[in-house]
Image (tube, rainbow, N blue to C red; front, side, top):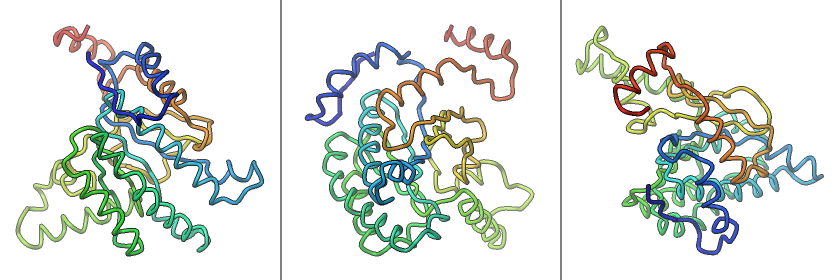
Amino acid sequence: MTIVRTGLKNDIKMTKNIDHYIKRLDMDRLPAHVAIIMDGNGRWARQRMRERTEGHSEGVHSVNRITRLASDLGVKYLTLYAFSTENWHRPTEEVDALMRLIGWTIRKETPELKANNVHIRLLGDIDRLPEEVRADLQHGVDETAGCTGLTLGLCLSYSARWELTMTVRKLAEAVLNGEIAAAAISEKDIEDRLVTSGIPDPDLLIRTGGEQRISNFLLWQAAYSELYFSPVLWPDFDEECFVSALEEYQKRERRFGKTGDQVKTEQQASGEI
């Protein structure tokens, strides 16, 4: 397998370690789609007697590190839970700071993402975001529209229950308009109306920060995802942590309701083993 290095040119640590990471992994068994609940920014800041907003700012560095490595390794989709619909209930000062940080980060990182062939996709109730943030995000989407490498999904003002509610409304309208019969609604009809339409379900869902729940994130899509819970707070989640999660993923047998023997038989028939 040929590995194309697409990371930032000035990232010396990445340059030194990418071969090391590749040697540790089965490059033919990488997850196509990794989703991450980036938890722990506030606690990271509190442990250091800092403002919560500083934890969010520090978390941006982790986003950059993991996005670069995922792209370099050949992961096709990376979806990040950046701001939930429930986060709107946080103190106004923190929400405003987060919105400014999101806009600033996209403005700053879009040229590098485009240079590294990373396509930005927005997932969530984007209309709720401030106008200037929406403009920054849309600029990032437009600038990277032609990129064909990693798809970076940013879940902003997102929750799975919101998504499923919107999907039900779309299906109800389709039934009322005579576009589809209620009895004919299939799983594909639902998937086609999710905000993740066209994106495969996550193979691996990582949550940082030590909590062991999925917090209203990709409830439909994560039905058969492998779950990995890391005690590391998001600002401290680095390349080593990410590769450890991938190693754990590669140790697991994904059966999708079948028996282990069935899976092995199918793998033998397809030449995978």
